[in-house]
Image (cartoon, rainbow, N blue to C red; front, top):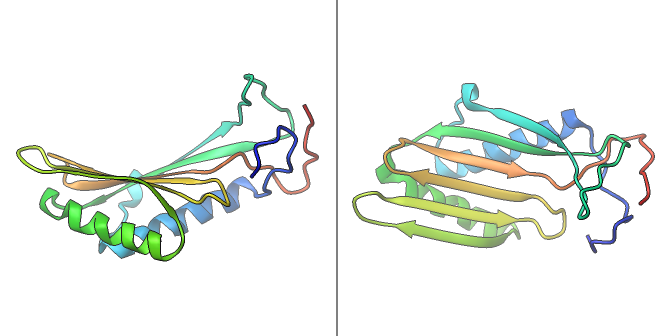
Length: 150
């Protein structure tokens, strides 16, 4: 996306966005050798807010999708490395990767799809025996809605 204020937004329903985020998160979990705990899934929809704090009235939204998967702290780094390699192999941009060793180990992976505008984060922290997954979509316009111009 070029960043023009009235550039056509990608179209997707809230239901499809949530299904896509679930599928993508489940795919990352499979890469890591873990299974998402369904009770931790938290899809959160927001109104899109523009650069100058404008909010359109055309139904546009973005989605933050959060979930967790049980995994011992000792296995966090190796599992997140597998996700990173799969993302790289599939053309995603790795925006950051950090491992902290020692008494309180952690691992942080941030990635994005530069063409579609969504971001991905996977984190593992001591003492939590789980990986945290999050996906954030760009601003999406529901099918059939007329995009408001600014």
